[in-house]
Length: 132
Image (cartoon, rainbow, N blue to C red; front, side, top):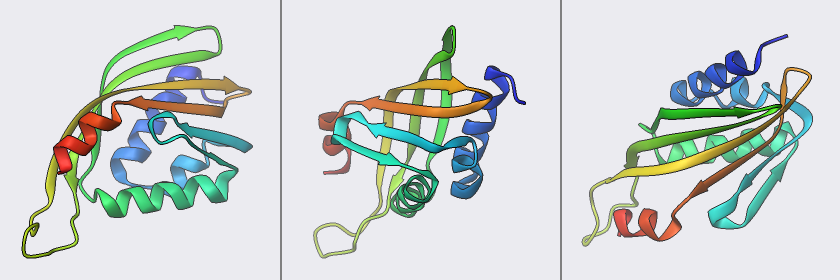
């Protein structure tokens, strides 16, 4: 069984390698991810994997850089910076991928060496302004 810190290290390794299958394998069978800014929740590994695959398509060079980790029992908060480019649908007005550099906060709830819930908090207005 992975320690809490090992689990979080593997989570960011999987995310930065864009390995949706490996990332979702870190969750319990009924694990869930809450995308707070978007008001969306995905439950179960299949839904989690589909969501990540779509995100990695939208931002094919995305990477997360951990800035601070705070542990409280079986919960961990990680302050991060996410950076990459949003792949655009080329039009006459908008042909280039848009750079994104966005601070955020992941909240992890862990049980028996697996993620049972993750919450991702970031500023939707800031994200939309960067890709406009």
